[in-house]
Image (cartoon, rainbow, N blue to C red; front, side, top):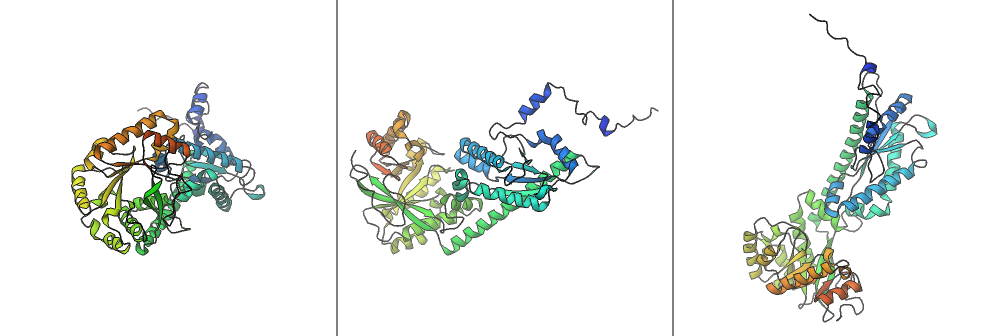
Length: 451
């Protein structure tokens, strides 16, 4: 029987041998681990340097995570995502030598990822880093991220969150350094996930309190007859309680989706929009948003909405229910049947965000809305795009074919206004005429007149 082969020492192992890769492979490896958006490399490229630092003293990790970054990029596009990550990487680099030690090493958890790693081996007074040093460094990073103009709006809206975690790389002579490093990264990232979960729970509790106390606020933005220069109606827009984390609409509705409370929030917004419309002129239309599933609810118009209409001395014919094109309608035939019952009670219907989302010309013709609202993405810089102008003209033809009035949303400039009038659009909405306000404000100056 042959004796078992002699065990190689770790030093003799080809895996541990730094020369096991050919020189030609090294540039390829560096390129594969380099992220061109942030200018940073994945931490794996720095393992040798981190091993050396760990051998000389203590090594700590601070992680900066953006838990909902994927959702933001899906909603707003990769260009926004790239811009945010690039700016964050730049700021972390600028913090070296001031808020972070000079020798802090900044890397990514992985190429094309949104998890930043800051390796710190030096604490105050040039001594070895401690957990307190890591916590302090994390606090300074958080403060700087909060102050970034480029992402302040995203943070305030709740579309973007971030959290900080930290951990020390354990000292051991028997466990491979790479495994100790990976374990420390997992521990630091677990801390960020716990913090993210805690923030989400707090927001959901805040939302439930808003629903219980009905503390949403309603703003109204004019919808203008640009041919006559008069107000045709107003769209009701909801805000959360002032000076709270859910004040911004994006944060409020994003939280309701994650908490599975969209239906409850949708009903509350609609009811409060009507209840707060006291003094609304009987010749105007009040546009309120409605989720497709809400319209299919058997008690849709017989609940608080009818009470609110009576309080505001309004009738169903004053109310236009906006169905967003961004929401999928699973059973169009059933949806149209429910919609017919709502219309028989006098309510009008609009399809919002036309030009985006799931709806097609087929669904528009099946629903037969009273209004089509063209999405801001087609209106922005419409004066510079013949393609957008042709699309707007096509939607006007669709509207004429089904007897629907067409409204252009998001008009912000005189140039957009003139281009839309030249296309034949009669109704418009946007900051060019007036921003949303808690009261039914008039138009700005003489805007909205004939062009």
